[in-house]
Image (cartoon, rainbow, N blue to C red; front, top):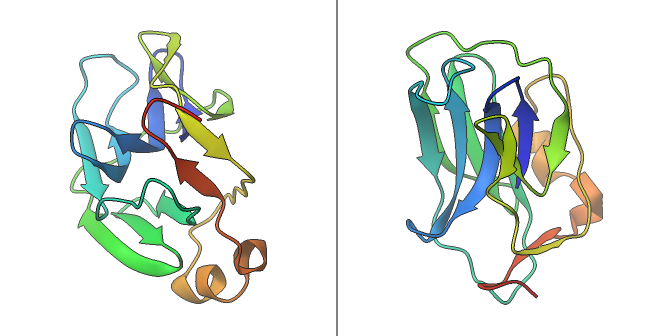
Length: 139
C-alpha cells in the first residue's frame, strides 16, 4: 500500500484489495470521502512470494505493472486533483484518518514525480528484486 494523500482522502493509491483478490491502482476524483474513484487491477498475486508492483498515472491513464510487465491499464476520463498532503507507505487516507493498512511486508519503495515507462521498470528498478510480499492476515 502506498498513497498520495489530500486532506480527507488519498488522491492516488496502490493497494491489495482483498474482496477482489488482487492488486489495484486507484485515483479519487476529488478530496471528498464520497467522490468517485477509478481503478485498474492486476491478476491475483502469489501470496507467499515476493513480487515487484508498480503503479501510476500520467493524468490520462492508470497503470499497474507486476514484475516489470504491464498487467492492466485504464483511461482516466475526468481530470484528477493535485493532492498536497504526505506520501504514505502502509496505509491510505479515508475520512481524514489512516485506513486500508498493509497486512504484509514492504522491503523498499521508490517514488517519482513523473510517469515512469516500462523500460525503466523492467531494466533495473531495485536491482530487479521484488519488494512486496502479501500474506493474508499479516506476517
